Image (cartoon, rainbow, N blue to C red; front, top):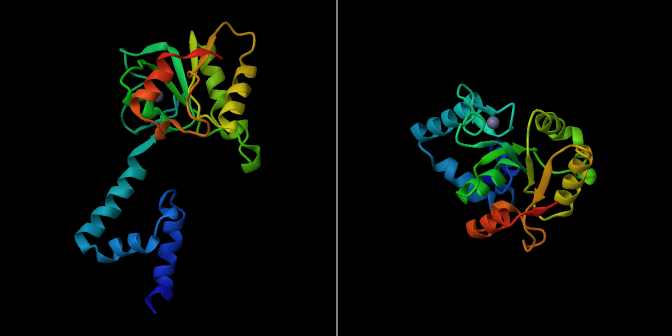
Length: 199
Ligand SMILES: [Zn+2]
């Protein structure tokens, strides 16, 4: 049986590591790749290699950017450098950008605190954020997901900034509990941001 082929099983095992795909029918994905002709296969491999070669994280805001180009956020003169919106991941940043209503800077933490999964402060870019805030920031906006992990992360960061002359705000109430920014519609995210409240 072909589904016992070690080559196919090894491929399925790799697919299983991919978030989102792991919850799908992996045979459908495998079928797509098995059916690809040689030029399309080469193209897929080459764009993946280019992605890994040419994209890295900005060492200031920690979002993804082209390696040989300046960060589009940090280098923009049109954005307010005194305002930093802190997000768990890059996908949340995309959700906020899609609202078209935010013109400050970002800071991508790389996740949220989650002791059960072994994610502590040193696994996130919290230290870098504290240093960044010290070099000049008037408002810090917590745009975390409405989860216990998001709340714990917000509390931890604010404790690290205690006594500092900085305004800390967070998204408006009313967002569904357990929800992530990326899963919400543009208007809901925009409202949550524009009606933000003191943390
Ligand atoms: Zn940046």
